[in-house]
Every structure is written in C-alpha cells, then in structure tokens.
Image 1 (cartoon, rainbow, N blue to C red):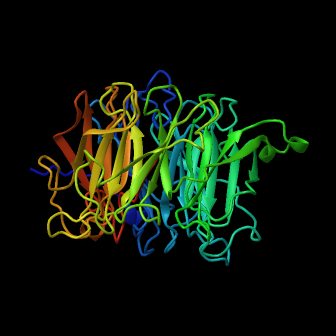
Image 2 (image 1 turned 30 degrees about the vertical axis):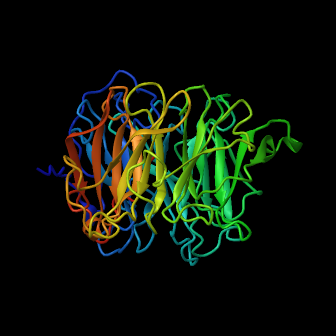
Image 3 (image 1 turned 60 degrees about the vertical axis):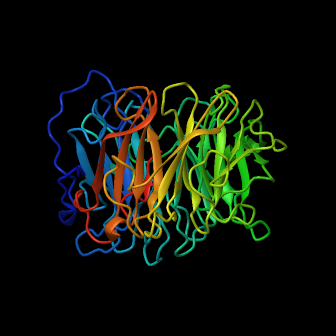
Length: 474
C-alpha cells in the first residue's frame, strides 16, 4: 500500500513551515549535509517550478531532516524567497531551487545550503540568475544571504547563472569553498564565509566556456576536491570534459592561477558524480552521456578511475549501457540512461556503488515512465553482475508507472538513518504534472523496498507545476 508522507507547508504565505521543538544537542555533528547538527544527514529537494502565492514558477526548496527511521523524521520545512530572513522576493520564473549543494560554509559545524535561482531578475535585467545561502543551526535551516553577484557585463539575460553549484575544499585549507556556473560565467568563492554571504575571496574562472553543470570530488587522494565542468562545444557534441586541480604557485598571488586545468579528451558526458568505486583511496569520476553522438541510442555512463595524478586520460574507462551484459533492460531510443547519476556505498562493503537514472524509459505502455539502475562497486571497479533496476511498477515501490512521470529524473545516495549504508532517493519530476520523491533504504544486501515511502508535491504543500524532485543537494 502506498504510504504518502504529509508535510505541512504554507507556500502561499511565504513563511518557513513551523517546526516542532527539538532538544538541544551538545555540539553540531560537522557532517556535510546535517543542517541541524543532530548527527543525521538531511535531504534538500528542489522544486524550481513551484508557485508561491501568485508568482508562477518562483520555486521552493523542501527540506527533510534525517532520523533513525530515515526521512522524513519529525522535522521538515518548505523554504521560498518569501520565507523569513531569506533575501529577495518570490517572483514568477525565478526558479529558486534549480540547483542545490550542501556544506559548512561558515565553519560553525552546521551544514548550510547553497541554492541557485537560475532565472532571477536583477534590476531591469531579466533571467540573469543568482545564488543564495541558507544557514544551518540547531533548529535547522533558517535565514539566508546572497552570494556576491557578477557584474552586468559578465552575465547575460536569461543566462541561467546559478544553474550549477557545488561545494568542496578545493584548495586544501580545511574550509568549504563554492563554485557556481551558468552559461558564460563561472565563479569560484573561497571559504570561510561570513553570515552575510561574504567569502574570503572570489574570482571568475576564466578558462571555462559555456557550461551549466559542475561536478566536485577528490580524484587525486590529496584531500583537495577537483572541479569538473562539462562544457558545451561546437566541435564535440558529446561534451568537452576538463577538470581543475589545486596547483599552487601561480602569478601575482591570484587565486585563479593556483589551479591547473586538466583535459580528458576522450571523455563525454553532460553531468556526473564522484566516489571511490574500486576502494583504492582515489575518487573516481562517473559521467552520464545520455544523448551524445558516441553513446548508444538510449544513453550510457562511463567511469574514469582516479589516481595520484587524477584520472589517466589514456585509460580505457568502464562503459555501461542497457545492452551491457548483466544490466537490466535494453538500449532503446531516448531512454535517457545516464541523465542522472550518483555514487555511494549502499551495502556497506566499502566500495562505492552507482545509481543511474533513465527517466525516458518506457514501462510497458507507459511512455517516459522512467527507471533507475543500481550497479555495485568492487576491487576491480564497477561491475554489472547483480545489477538491479527499479521502477514504480517494482514490487514494494510506491505508486504506479505512468506516462511522463519521469521517475529517475534525479537520484541521490545518502545515509539518512545513520546505518553506514547509503539510502536511495529518486525524483520523478513530472509525476502528476507536479513531481514526487521516493525513498528506498540501503541494507547489507542492497536496496530494500520494504518500508519504501514516497512524497508527492501535493503532499509537500507545493502548488503549480512544481517539478518537485528536479534536483537534490549534494
């Protein structure tokens, strides 16, 4: 029987959802996505199409706080640009929540949330985009500050600045940094940040061209996160993959010059995630190539294994698609296999696993109903033996596969119940035209559908074509 999670929300009034009193904790946990410091990771979900009062498509973020029973626990919230303390005003087509990233920006032990509003208007300039930080604390996320805005000369109208955001310690100083992308402008903000949103310094990343995405993770084992920007390129429709690694000693002490750009000329993809799949201590790069000319008609993923110098550009990556032996399903036109990916250890064996979204997958006669596939890591890398696929027609998964649900539009692997095993959250951004999310718990034998739960946009109190589940914070 479908178990729907009901969240009290008041988007129309634009105020933060009232939260129950929570006993004070002795000290915040310091976990990268623990907004209230209680030792459980929390989940932030984007709903960039949500209406806020009469502002159509203004956007919202739903926060589910982790607990021993996973999500939702006893605390949850809906936040918009009309919520108390959040800068700006909810306006039509702002798309607040188009991108999300979690990290402790002000080094107080509580995770904060970076939120992109890709079409925020600035003055008379339409659709420029902006980025807001929501601050963590013992009561969860509350209040916020805007990150420094690029100049008018640097950002175009409808350019989507803030479409891609990521956090990480990019220079190894122990502080969380932020990078923001959007069409022609990419910025690097160095932490720590003040509560007004002011970074230690910030600069434009000049070598980056047109991109709307960024992937962050340590690919070299040096405790410094690399930044991967999949670039749109006229000469390479499959994507131009380059990454930045910290390489101090540049000119004039300019922050941007302390990073070296490394190319992966044989790699293709539009998005990705990182994690140590083969357990060698180096993060690996998983790229989703769901529509490139080199990919099968239904899409594919590739794994580029990290090392002390990052992924070797000459290596032969692991390639997986739905015609790969052991992978459920079949390679079919416009399945969009690889349109969402994430990496995490589902079964607790110390090897990171990979989940792949294919939101264009047809399930029976249901067109674009969507599915997700789970692949397991091992000492020899990503394997396809034991791979499993899930849809809303899978026994135990709430709901029913229906045309245009887009189940698998987004995926997130995150240990929300503190068992040491990553749980899977799946976004179906077009479910009933508004979106939903589904939660499956991780166990020693993999994911279980026992006790699986779902939350619809309506159950979260969202209005309009919310695209609830469009994105999850990483």
